[in-house]
Amino acid sequence: MSSEEVVRIAQQRGFFFKTAPSYPNAPAGFLDYGPLGVALKARIIELWRRMIVKRDGMIEIDGAQILPKAVFEASGHLSSFTDPFVRCAKCGSVYRPDKLLEEKTGKAVPEKLSDADYDSLMAKAGVKCSKCGASLSGTTRFNMMFRVGIGPAGEEAYLRPETCQSIFVDFPLLYKTLRAKLPIGMAQVGRSFRNEIAPRQGLLRLRELNQAEVEVFFNPKKTDAPMYEWAKGEVLSFRTPDGKDIKMNVGEALDGAIIPNMLIGHYLALITRFYEAAGVPRSFQRLRILSDEDRAFYSKAAYDLEVSIGTGWLELVACNYRGDYDLGGHEKASGTDFTVEDGGEKVLPHVFELSLGVDRSTYVVMEVSMKGEGDRRTMALKPYLAPIQACVFPLVNKDGLQEAARSIVADLRESFDVFYDESGSIGRRYARADESGVPVCITVDYDTLKDSTVTLRDRDTRNQQRLAASDLVARLGDLTRFPRIEGPAPEP
Ligand SMILES: [Zn+2]
Image (cartoon, rainbow, N blue to C red; front, top):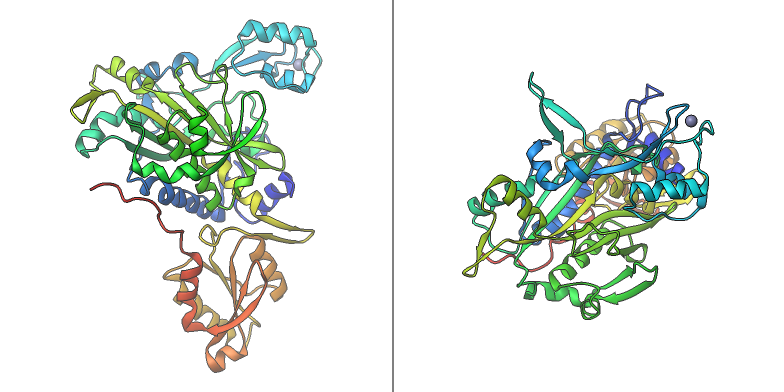
């Protein structure tokens, strides 16, 4: 199904839509979630929590969105969280030179070129303003953080461009007060803000975005543990920097130096499994290995988890071995000791990060779940992710069927998110429920009044089955339960 079609259904069914839709000229890069989107996003986050955060006994925090300037001086964002841009001398339109070059030449432009490199490539390709045809200025830099002023004096501060900085700056306090031991994961879900120059990918490049991030702190000398062994046999797809696709298990990737250590293998396998459980088949996923040039200078290894959708490969998670760059930087700038004791040794922990884009992931889960064509579409969401877990319909709106249906809704509402719908033909009601991802519909008819049974209709098979209304709670409970939290319990 095309991306436009998915976006249209998302808007029509109340999943998400562009911010301030009443204002045609509202800026791009912002999105509002409607009721179904709120619920779907919350359930995807809950699945992530269960399969990664709780599974490995991690600590979850919720930090402030505004952070002092000093934090971003130490993290390097103030000096280098920038994008290149060029401006039209005549009409004032602003562009990213890499995007213009890609459009003009049809070739990918390497990340991290210097401004002079962009200028010479632009001159060579003869790129002009795509709106008015006039010449463009030379490349300059724009810092993508949103600056805010605290109090009347306007003390310089910034909206965080990623959630992880509060994990890093809170690390010494959390580690001590929670009596943590290495390795320890710290996680956070929340909003981040990036003042993108020209977000043209609609809902996929946002200026205000939701992230779910995990920072795993570990002793670089201890990256093997029995709890990682399970991952050795997990087969993953890698895309090498020179464009080769290879499939191998984590054990082989470790032997072939594609993965630097078993701890990282464990987390790459775990994040792959998370998307599988969210409904994205492993065959739709790959780990793109970032080349030395594409990685940040401090990064020891980096992989983008990408998913194949209608428009191509889309990055969902940045998986980055950041070494001790973050803790070292904040240690130096803050004057606080960031080292910890580990087996009688003083260590500045290394970090492996899984930085997951929640909005993109929500979109991808919807797109890969869409089946069918024409006016018969089904969003085949995993039942535990479905925003509405069951619809209840009276067959007709008379003779006490509505009351019987409402009383079933009242019973189910205690444990589930159910939706009562009495408008339109049964066929139309089924179609709306299918398009909204509702796994089952419950229909109340004349037999219900006689013997308290109902019809349960399955979204994916469209099979219908008769069962006692009193069995509905147990049946829906089985159907919508999250997968078990797998894996070794953390050591007490
Ligand atoms: Zn122009």
